[in-house]
Amino acid sequence: MISQLEKYFDRLWPICRSITGNGLRESLKIVSELASMEITEVPTGTQVFDWVVPKEWNISDAYIITPSGKKICDFKVNNLHVVNYAIAVDKKISLDELKKHLYSIPEMPDAIPYITSYYSEKWGFCISHNELNTLEEGEYTVFIDSTLEEGSLTYGEAILNGETDKEILFSTYLCHPSMANNELSGPLVQAFLYQKIASLPKRKYTYRFLFAPETIGVIAYLHKHGIHLKEKLEAGYVLTCCGDAGDFVYKQSKRINTNADRAAKHVLKNQTIPYSVIPFSVGGSDERQYCSPGFNLPVGSLTRSMYQRYKEYHTSLDNKSFISFEAMEQTVNTYFDFVRALELNEKYITTIPYCEPQLGKRGLYPSSTEPLAARKLIHDRMHFLTYADGEHDLMDIAEFKGISIFDLEEHIAPLLEAGLIKKA
Image 1 (spheres, rainbow, N blue to C red):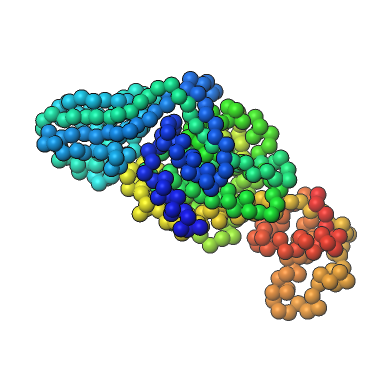
Image 2: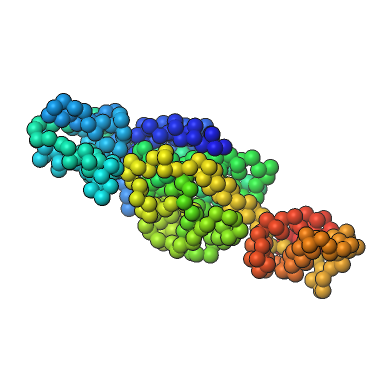
């Protein structure tokens, strides 16, 4: 998986993406090689709740020519150099006038910032503060070859059907230009997670994977599918900033103790990577749309180095050297463990509720409690049966014992076969 993650990262990295446009479509086409998706176009001007789908933006080139003839802020060298959604411009201006349209970060003098103007028609360039300080007096040529016109917003959706119509949602965005952790880690982790879930021999839940522009894309999606999700969604997660080697951070849903939250916290507690759990907040990504008052869906988010918490965030320093494909694979596997826990989790009822059942005559009790492994097995089995009361699910039972839900998995089949338990 690691080499494939890197291969797709390298293909997606150079593309200039935005909340609309051909860069977004091209990126979705590449990701669809991993997760077969249906593409939806939402026309410019469509009212989606309190928002309106904006004009479509496309760009082919942008740069500045200095008085000495040097080309700087070259879009083709780094697509962060142009303000995302900048309108077209082609004129000569003074340095003082140019500086009104330049953005830099004095505290990070080597970084190119990421700046957008989705809902305000203006132009501008992003530049490292060190380079800004070298600019000479004189006449500059500024050139941006872009279009802002009637078009559409694009999102992709992949669905893996299960045995029930209860759903698990995974949602990520694919609308930022060349940034690694804050952009490509989410869709890459989600696409490879899709493949792992698709390989399951059977699925209890139906799985929905959304690849959409952040904020406006998810708002447009919820405008069409939100009521369906309110009725069917069992758990959901927003995937972003999950590609570096930082500790895991799990942001809970606004409802705090949904099955999404329970599965995430249980899995994280029983794995080896350090982690923290934080409450829901509106600062972040599309969880604020899913958890808005009208929907209040059971959607949390697992990240690594979290947005706004690492200095490289929204700059050119959030690049390939910042992330780790080994860590990205860990994130895929951890999200897949969330899935395994949700799939496994059920309520069971013992068929012999009065006193403990006689396991020995059913071949379910060892002749000796040595070695210790056999003792643990029988203790876990008896613990399972004691709490198989139709009220506690497997995650409850595992939490009571201080073990992983996966430690209980080996007991389900033999106990079902012996007729000692049934699904509630």
